[in-house]
Amino acid sequence: MLISLAILLIIISTPVESMKLNDGHIHYNQDIWDRLKPEEALRLLNENNLQQAIVSSTPTLGTEKLFKIAPEKIIPFLRPYRNHRDRYTWHSDPSIIDYVKGQLDKGFYKGFGEFHLFKEHKNTAVVNRLMQLIAQHQLVISAHSDAETIETLLNMQSEVTVIWAHCGMDHPVDDIKRLLEQYSKLFCELSFREGITDNSDILTPEWKELLQSHSERFITGSDTYIGRRWAALSEITDTTRNWLKQLPANTRDLIAYKNLLNLFE
Image (cartoon, rainbow, N blue to C red; front, side, top):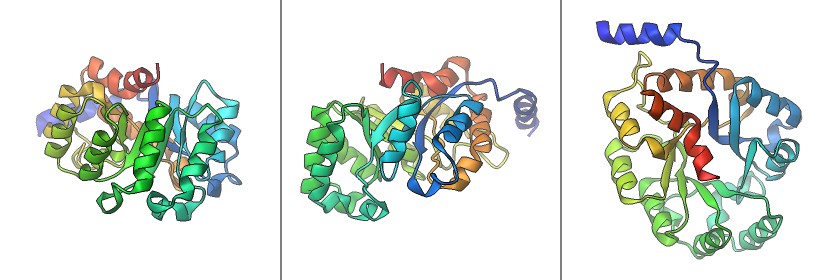
């Protein structure tokens, strides 16, 4: 208990605002546009010292709004969602293929996702065709999926880099470790990931070991999927910085910003 308290006091007394971050999970969806203009969204990213961010949106016009203003900051990803209904049907809707082709023809998208895909639909004809397109365009994907589906995607197009959104949410650490060791193209994004810290905001031993042993494979994220998350961006990034500060400097810097930079060199 004394050790934990000492660590906690160091964390509390150390300013977190100065630590730069890159963010692997920002959304700028249509339901926020009237309340948060593009310039204001970018101001929030800057105020929280977010250097670069993977941005995807429903519809994708939101991503384009931010990219147009700040192409040096925004890493644009294309979601297969023309509207919110597509989230539940895209994997089996052939019309999504032409939609994605048309968007990719614009030539500036760096990735595909974040999309939601689970084992019931992991291997449809539409998913297979889209993964072929992704490989052809040399895109990175961001998948909100279970471990079985992540493994299917990694095997479907072995040259494609996969970012596992939320790092499986609550999947056992053993699953994550196994997949990281088996697949060099797998990265894990950590927004909403359960179990990283305990009730005292201290890194749990299993997560500290995992983050240090695979430090080059993790990226941070905020997941601003609703307006409430944009409003809480400072709190979210402060929480991230607090657990990052409990890691050795080289590990911290990789996860905080270097890994995302390396993905898009």
